Amino acid sequence: MEGGCRRRVMVVADPTQESAGALQYALSKAILENDELILFNVENPNSWRNTLTTFLRRPSRSSGSAAASIEGSLGHADFLEEMKNACKLAKPKVRVRVEKVALIEGKEKASIILDHSKALAVDVLIIGQRRSLSTIILGYRRPGGSTRGTKPIDTAEYLIDKSSCTCVGVQKKGQNGGYLLNTKTHKNFWLLA
Image 1 (cartoon, helix red, strand yellow):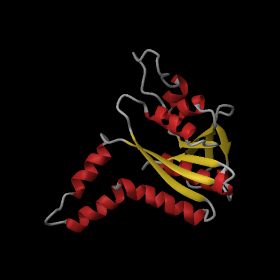
Image 2 (tube, rainbow, N blue to C red; image 1 turned 90 degrees about the vertical axis):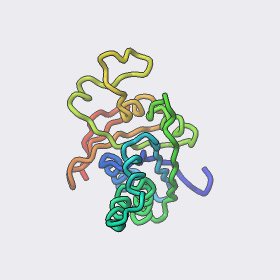
Image 3 (cartoon, rainbow, N blue to C red; image 1 turned 30 degrees about the vertical axis):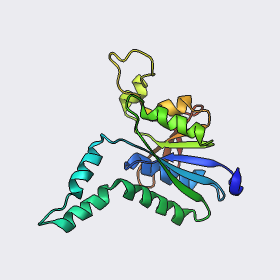
Image 4 (cartoon, rainbow, N blue to C red; image 1 turned 120 degrees about the vertical axis):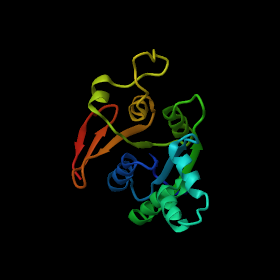
């Protein structure tokens, strides 16, 4: 790899607690000094967050500063910049870059992430995971299968199953509770903080 990087580690970045937990795991347990960290975001132009942010960007006569402060907390670019800055503070020698792609109509988010992880030659893929009891019991819907009576695809499970690189699904358990990790070979592996 160029620039003396040992590995390329990609963290799926979005403005959720699961994504923040995945980034925290990556910085504390998975990233080595000379690694390259890619914060990968799939933008959904139809997302309610984008609609709300656009609405809040409109100038307000009476509460311009309040709208600006709310926009700052919801702004799409802001959360990526905050994540990038957190990475630089925690691991100053790690090269960090942000990759953003738009969600393609008719294509699942998981497929887009998988395609880009291959194109970027990623060695380790880390994604925040929200697992409910029903997800654990019922699993996820496989593409091409019947959609009748099934729920939408679980992005983390799909990536763990289909990725050619090491893929880790991360659930942060409490402030100091550690992480629950899922990979192809290890399910519900508990790692203390």
